[in-house]
Image (cartoon, rainbow, N blue to C red; front, side, top):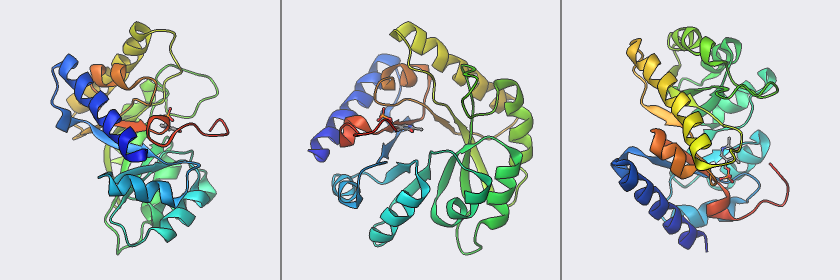
Length: 228
Ligand SMILES: *Cc1c(COP(=O)(O)O)cnc(C)c1O
């Protein structure tokens, strides 16, 4: 079932790219395996999937330990508390939810020498939800300039989790704001290549607006028992 679901998601990406006049190779698929066990990840890998996103650090580390022999790329897409940065620095390839300099500094300091630099996206609170994590759009460039200087991190781009939108046009408009911010940072000289946005419900709008990485859970692994 996971294999068929992956095929359908890839077909959605191809169709969305065709509508947007984009090359599907520009869009990386991240399989979000939170709340699913190592066997689900193994099945997705057998169907050709290499990038996996995890929200809960301890759950992720336990899963990784059971899958250590597979050549997987792990992305942290959950909140990173200051006292959890070491887990992220030691166990992930990417951290997509960096929204404060302090967290970035700790990740850089704690990244083990034998690992490649940690690939980082800044999480941006693009629609201004007051309780949401993410740097404000206005603070994104100053933070990006600081993070880009840290020796053991590579700043790759921006990540965003917009509120569910009532319709396609609203969703597209919000994703376009993220795209504009991404282009502003690039115009300011930052060599960014990753705009991480789009989930099961808004994949098409995100790709239409220029997403280069979609993070898909439900459409691949099925519904989660708890809202997560
Ligand atoms: C859970 C989650 C996803 C995947 O969401 P689905 O709607 O299940 O596709 C993507 N990004 C983040 C940050 C998530 O927490």
